[in-house]
Image 1 (cartoon, rainbow, N blue to C red):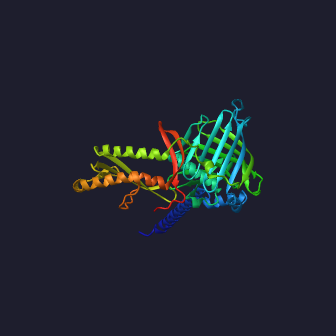
Image 2 (tube, one colour):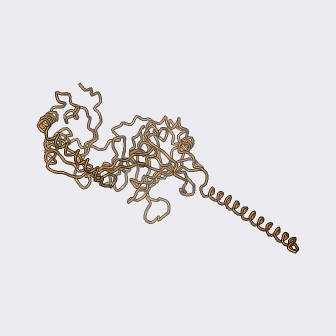
Length: 435
């Protein structure tokens, strides 16, 4: 009969079905366990969430006496003894006294350090306008570009004692946890929209600043032995141990001897040394005459110009970049016409290029028709360069007007990119009122 073996088949089929279900459950359970394990493993790799930079700085300020105490210090003068590691001491502690040092800070963004060694004196300073350094050979150097930006940023952080760095146009982000010496430390990156950036490391356990790093100047500072330095601000803790590690120089160790607060330091203390024999107004008038001659020669040439425009995020990072290349056509009699030839390294399409060439031709024709008018205006500008603003009240500012409205500071001679140069700082003249 066809159903004679059906009971056996049913039993076998039932067992097979049960085994398949059991196997499926086992697979699902294993998959679930693997997923949970992977999630836990990933959580371990990611570690705990990093605290916000504001919280890290707040904890540091609390550890060194409180924000109110630190904010009350408007300027500070420090005296240090300097130690230099002898060649025989190897990796041991510093054994040879090398000299003395003084450092100065003044709110909101000025710092200076003078290190007197047996083989010469080292000076460096920064304020909102400029940053400079002078070596043992007494060669003065004004910092530029990334070095200047980092030096000014470091000065603002030190002079404000981290109490209101945001008001100094400083951004901050927690970059991670790293091992500094024998303890973990949070790395906080401070930056400005001009691209300047420095890193600070704060001890996770002690909350104190233990290290700073300025990549632009290849300079590392290490801080330790925090305790009161005496004086009127007894609750303020200061690092009594400071290591200076600069690329190409022997490391120095400084021990704090004394600190004085709120003595009324002069702004001139942070200015570069000046050469009083230099006459800046006479120099600028001569530059103006030379520039007019150069402008006349430039009108005989065409050239290519590449411009890069960057949009910076709130973190000081580049989030958008635009590159344009133009052909420049100076026009005799004054003025110039720009012809766009590429964007972001991509040449213009034939259609856009045709439109651009048509626009340039029309603009050149227009300038040529107004050539006589341009010539008259140029002669008028030349007169203003000698005597100030023109009779028509034009907004162009001549050299004489610039000299009347500006105050020139610290004129000095330096070598800039292997060339002799005259450097000076300037600011609005106090009390000047335009007529």
